[in-house]
Length: 163
Length: 253
Image (tube, rainbow over all chains, first blue to last red; front, side, top):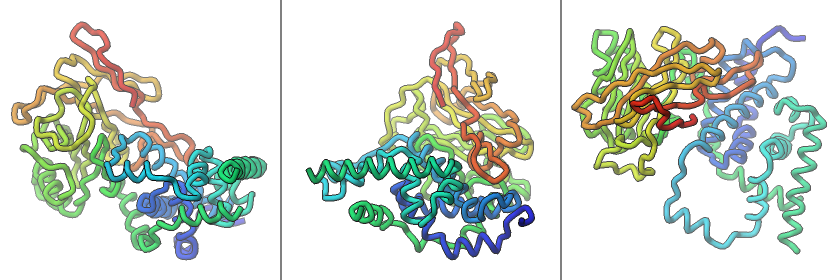
């Protein structure tokens, strides 16, 4: 059992070893690499500043994931509240014929947030169901159900495209 | 599901790994300690942003220069800010804070200035808040009222969070309905002639509970592990009244 708090060295070590994984995950979630980098940097900065509040109930990495994902969710909600402007060029791109894989891409976007995050954490971060559950603040069974539902939805989409 | 792996690889392909820097993380963490907001989250449209020339402004105010002077320095040092079309004009002020307005190509802008920092907001979608020279390309203003909440960290030393905004000329009174159910009246100020607008400006400063005073996201309540327990703006709605006391418009925030 550790004493309360994480150390700056632990958080820096995690950052140096795994920040790219955080970045991939948040990039997929936000679909915006620049915003994702900002979120990851902010998330680690928050973790660094609040390291004394870490209770050791999960790993330092899981705790940082919770913070980074919360920042990402906040960013996503903030973005949804903003007016959107689409240039003529962008509109033209959106109207272009979809490439192979775009249907699956679109299906990913429409998955519920928890399912998307579960898929991303499983794929990019190679996390176990238990780790994903801790990061998302849900039960392990919920993760299993979320991943099952996500894969079922995506598989159906693939079959529709093929059929 | 090989196809899914391909799509996931593609989704992450634009991740700017070069942007990752531990030194930047440390700098952001230090900035949070100073409870300031950063300029990187700047968005011109209906958003609070921070003019982040902390060192310059902190020094300037420290030697007795006014917050108006500080804001001149801030905006001059931020070429990405909206284009200024007129002078900075103080609407009202208190101890260590000042509400400053200016016309821009995005319409009327409001700075909530405290020593060393200043969130500001532009492009209020309120009738009369846009100049003829509006080049922002944003939607035409249709509301009677619009407002913003400054970062909870920008409290000017007295622990109060600031809510400010713009109301149309014929709005007679403004109430701010908070997420905790409280309703507070916000004083209305006529715009000084230098601003060449008929809109009115309101500001209300009130204490939030300590756990709500997050520097980046006021209203967010964190658990002991840093997890977000609740993320909700402290403002539920802005309410504009006409001269007879009837509700002109209620705008959810």
